[in-house]
Length: 120
Image (cartoon, rainbow, N blue to C red; front, side, top):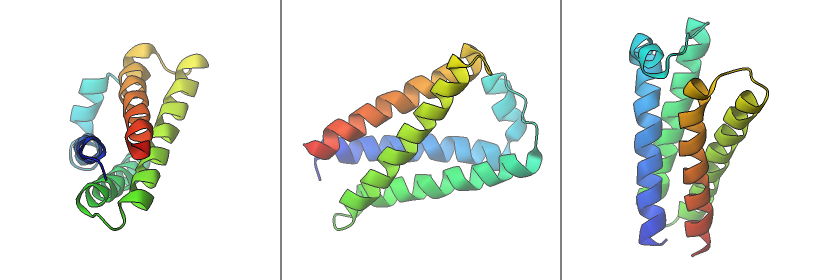
């Protein structure tokens, strides 16, 4: 694994962990930061746990040499999937740019970096 890929995976792990913690423990803070209303507390909790699990997978991929290839592919798929969903929400005008623009940009950049660094 290259050092660039490892650092990118640590960034992804941190990004996912921060949002996962906000979803699980401080959804009100998340709503204020993103100017979004979370409609369903149960789904928010579920998404928070999902996000924390993938943060842990990204951390494992960054720290484990043996399984890094498969785990980094998993994280690449997570960030790409997030970018597609946020892009869809923006293009269909279901959400405004202030709600989905920042996570779209972050996930797109992380997807590109993971794709490039996995090849290197």
